[in-house]
Image (cartoon, rainbow, N blue to C red; front, side):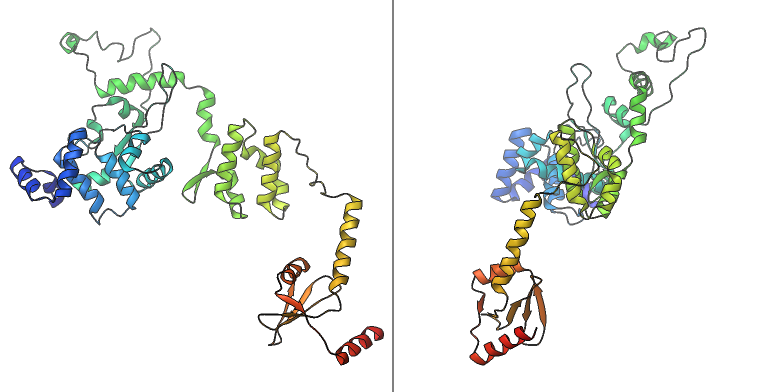
Length: 395
């Protein structure tokens, strides 16, 4: 047993001495904690180690959540599951719900805790509280017992244990070992309501196999999830991440399509896969497809319609030519760097710096700088104007 395990075992006399030597702030905190739930002293020492020991390399918020979960644990066996709800952890840690979920995901990945998949009650179908268990890593670090096979709550053990094959019955209709448990000679002295772990697993596994349909068996085979940036995505969506689509956008889109009861994102990618491969901006084109799917609009294989008709396009071209003529033939000067700028017939603004470096700029951006008085018209002399007119006539 290491020094940490010795620190968790405190005698009553030593407890009084340590409480008398503690600071007033520590006395108040311990008194409030014991008054609320009567937390044992060993649990308090374990919480202090989790919060302050440098060997537990997790974030500060992860320490707070792990300490709150540890306060619900059983010292006799840390493998016993605990049932703190997220709202309860919020009251204990004063953190938001999303922060607690991120911290628990971090603790689960690092092996400090284990979480059972959330199930539903058989009576009304409502969700049950997620069962959480302290990981073996923390138990070994604190020197406390951890035995998964000795859990008193067999229901949680059955959910996490591997399924045992169902015992087949003979043609004569012989019952299974579970049905024959009361026919044995020693059954009379074992009528105390307790059953063995093997019998419990056999009964529940047989019931689960009867309720599980063929469709539910094939669900896990069809989906192949890949871990991407701390989360999981279906395998057919990973190529979109390689093309620059953010995983967060894919997660939000999957949730949005599911909440609106539309086709899944994987189905849309399968239908419009070739269009997405040839698109210039894959994320924008995918967002357009998802938006039309949610609205209920028809998504055709043709390209997106133009935003302007023929007359509007001609008006925009004429307006651009007029803007170019307004600036053409004038020289502008940068009020900050002293660089000169001219507008070419193509519509690009060419900036000439003092070191001979040339820089091109769009007409829209150049007009914004002119309006902000960054570039002002340069007053040229009579000789320069005559030379400029001569160059124009020669052309």
